[in-house]
Length: 261
Image 1 (spheres, rainbow, N blue to C red):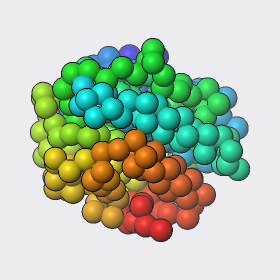
Image 2: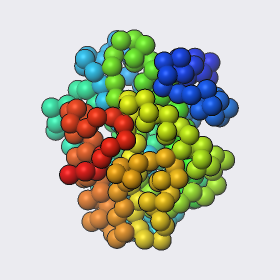
Image 3: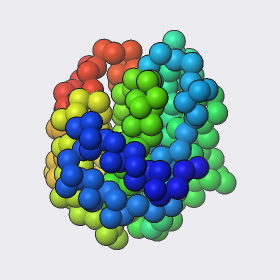
Image 4: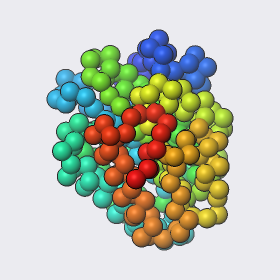
């Protein structure tokens, strides 16, 4: 694990390389904490054999509404199927996965690890309860991804990044705002090294509007209005399919068409 100064130095490097604007950097460094530091950890550079790497950051809502909708088992199943898809692909050695869950608190289950070492959600580590700190999670996860990606690039390993959030609600309780999310999103998309995606489940929230306000391109937003277990599993399958296309170089990082067929 790396300390705040180390992560701050990596963020400064991202500014110097044109990945982040000074304004976005200030937003990150003003909110550095143990969650970002934990999220910015990962497999050591010397242990990565792949010539280039795809970093997949999965952010999963664990608020009480997931349990209220009886979607808890489907989330666990869907996340496991996502890992199975990576594990069964030719790209598995070049994919590193980070897994976060969020409710009233943010939890980094693990930072960037090979697919075979990634944690699967189960009854012990995924028990939905609490509110939905969507914006704080987005900002902290993007900050952590920028820092780790900067570490890889500085060490000579090219990488592309995917950050995808799966939620059934809008933000409750964050310190950051949608505009803060949009500022970071805009910079990272412009760098053409990052793909940002949003999955919304249910019809109580205008997820297209929420995602747009956070800076996620319309073509990278998937809304499953049926808040059912089968619809949620289908959404995870679409995420895995698109993530594999990204890792294969069939989707260029940036703004266009993550969920396009």
